[in-house]
Every structure is written in structure tokens, then in C-alpha cells.
Length: 406
Image (cartoon, rainbow, N blue to C red; front, side):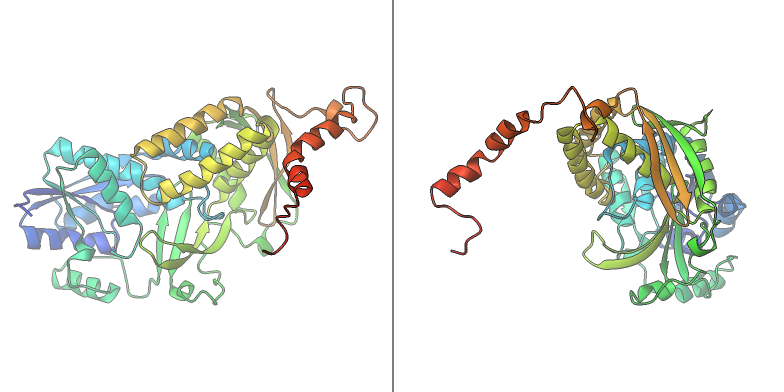
């Protein structure tokens, strides 16, 4: 690696990145600029973050408000694809990485930096997500990943390092959970969660109430969509971020959005994590419910395939790729008819679609009724079934039976 004069660090104010600033200066004798992305995490995480960065040795600290752009330009397009990783995970951490890394790269180029740096470990997915973005947008920038280089191995090592450098920190060895938060979700790893046979204690959860402690009375929320985008909640027009923020508060109070999963990381190992996605769970349920009303069988099947493929694209950090563009374009096309109103019932940890209507609805009571109708000739089904099963009939007539053992 050639001489580094200036590096822009993706900075959170946490223990890892607080140690990275002095380490970068020590190892590379360079100027370190701290970059902080506000993607809707708890405002308390951002309090005093600039002062902390400067106290750690940064020459400057840039805090960028990306909340609205995050939801409008990343969350909403991903929602249209229906992406859910391994059938459960709503991709909260994965969603935020492209916009954070992109803004970091743009700042680095603006400031004439030689390199970018992050605090991701060599075991996780985030290193891939950040560095894939760097490679796609500014391959000329050097990348410094301290966790893959330094000799420190633990939280205690980092605390001791900061103490030696006389750098103040609010971190402690007792903070056993690793958490990542944004407007869409909060994730929890570490502590007792490292044993997959151990049930999470209530101290794991920080956002939602326990479903057992949730109100005994259900609450109903009404969501309006225009071409797959949430535009109003309970009759009030809202920006994408404000709508999500409102639903987070409502759904969290009913214990909605908790999951406890073991997932396959991109680097090959399995990890166990607990995620809270209250508002996102409601929006996803509503959008999927609306799709069932307006997409025909073939279109809905294809949208499911797009969602499955895109869940891996976004989880694996491949947002800035031709494949991502193609899948997003397909989802955008399908979403043109996804307009309507959905009512979701919130009760004891569940978000259930109970009402749905759309000007583009393909549902016809006249055709689907169990009562007498004058629009559907049931005799027509006989010919349809004979043609639909024709290949099976021919196989049987030829003595070919796919169910028999060879």
C-alpha cells in the first residue's frame, strides 16, 4: 500500500471506531476524517459524536442526515422486491450499508482522501458490503480494515488501548451485546445469544414490548400505497421516513417485529441474532397482502422469485451491480398496479392483514362466490383439466409411471 495521507473512516462513536482513529494515525501517520451516517438510529447515539471523534484524534467529523433518502431510495425499492433473507430476516442491517458506504465514498472523493476505512470484523458480512461498494464506486481508493490487520482481539484489548492513549470512552467490558440500529430495525448479537439453545432474556430486546405484556386490545392501522410505495397511514399523508417512524412506535407497543434466527453469513459460518423490525413488519405484511389482490398468478410467482434472488443480492452487498439493477427494475414494473388500502390488525406480537381494497383488484365476488352465479360455467373446467393433465395421461397410457421405483 502506498503512503496514505488522508483517510475517511465510517465512524459510529462506539468502541471499535474510537480505537481505529488513533490506530490509523499511529500506523499510517495520516489525517483521519470521521464520517457519521444518520440513518435513523436512536438520536442518543449521535449526541456528542463529533466531540468524541475529535477527542479520539480525528481532524474533523461530518454527520450526514440520510434518514429520508435511506427509506425512500433503499428501503422502499427493496420492499417492492419482497426480499426476505432465508424466509425470515427483513434485511435491516443489509439495507443501510449501500447508502452509508456511498456517502462515505462521496465525502472521501470530495475531500481528496487516499483511503477509506471501516470497523467491520473479518468474520462478518458488513466488510463485504462496505468494500463491494467502495470497489464499485471508487476502486482507486485504498481500503483499510483494522480488524483484519491489528493484533487486538477483544473488547478488553480495545479498552486497554484507549486507556493507554488517554482517550475517553463510554464503553465498558460489561456491555455484552453487539447492536446495530437504523430507522428500519435494530439487531442484537453476542451474550447469551451465542448459545443457540439459550432463550433470549428480556434484556436483549430494546425496542418492542414483550408480546405477553402487550395490550389485550387489538389496534388497527390503515396503510395506503401508490405503486408499491406507502404514502399515508391512518388517513394522514406522510413522507416515507415519517410513515415508518410512526408505525415503529405503534407496532413496538404491541410486541410486533421480534425474530430470533440462525442465519448463514456470506463468509461461511452461521450466526445467531435477534432482530426487532416493528414498523417494517407491518409495512411488509400490508404490501404482500395488497399484492395478493392485484397480481395474477404468474406475476405473483415471478415477484416471489425476484424477492428470493434479491434477498441474497442485498444480503451479500451487491447493490451496485447489473443484477441488482435488473431485479429492481422488474420489481418496479410489477409494482405499477400495487395501489390500494390495507388494514392491519396489531395484537400480541402479530401483524395480520384483515382488510384490503384496490382500484386494480383482480378479485371478483361474482366469479369466486359459493352462491349461485351467472358468469362462470363450471362445465368449462372439464376441458381445462383434460388439457392441463394431458402429459400425465399420455405417460400413463404409455406405461410410464413416475411414482414407481426403477
